[in-house]
Image 1 (cartoon, rainbow, N blue to C red):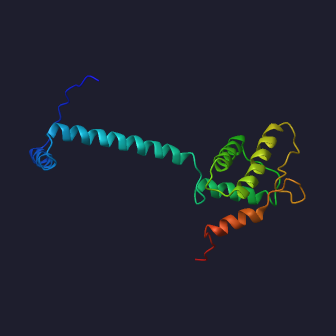
Image 2 (image 1 turned 90 degrees about the vertical axis):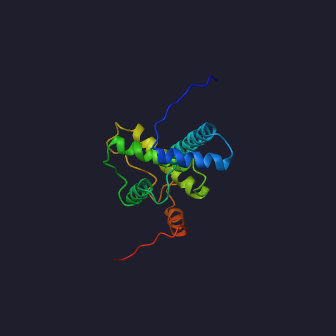
Image 3 (image 1 turned 45 degrees about the vertical axis):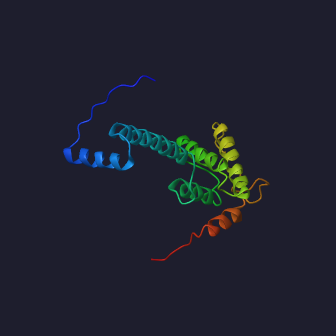
Length: 163
């Protein structure tokens, strides 16, 4: 790779500190600055990658998880849904992230899989005015096992506090 010159304007005080540091490290100021810039760029790339990866996950204490669980609990008593397709699509994406996340127990991911499939089915029945979500109906063979979600929430130490 062809090297190019980069001129940087620094205060005299900063330049003096950098020169002292370079002398302590027994390298030239140019080499030290090159190493610092390279290290910083590598760190930025790692941090950027970690940030992108964090968006792929849904933490159990996140707003998305709370919205999803509130909606799931609502379907326990109200099987019909009057939310927009965009809202349902967002829920489906949240569930999909949870399904791909090994941080959640398999038993809970199995229950969320029922929700995912039911959202998919529900969205495909747009022309049916009597459509509803099956996972909330206790008598349905594919009913959501709410006790699995309760156990997960309890295991994470969530509790109700009266203020």
